[in-house]
Amino acid sequence: MTIRTIDIKVASNGRMVLPLSVRKAMGLHGEAKVILTIEDDEVRLSPIARGVSRAQALYREHAKTVRTTDDFLSDRKAEALADTGDADAPGPKKVSR
Image (tube, one colour):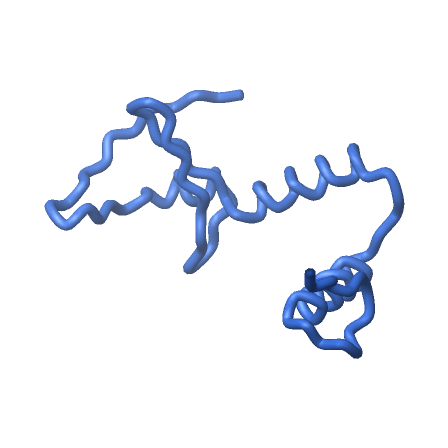
């Protein structure tokens, strides 16, 4: 891991420009989103894609069954329909007392 320190200017409106060398090192091309993490008085920027990759790796490491994105979306749709009280919705039904 290489650590570099670069001075950048923060404008009065809070805007700053990431130098090209930093964007290249982060794998950012064109318009992009990053995750900004604040810890005490330090800020860390990470490309969104890297966060997604980490989340996927954690899921694969801890998942007990194989599930596809379609499985997940189907389950969430069923839960949302059940939450609205739709009697024809698949999945668990709400019981009113």
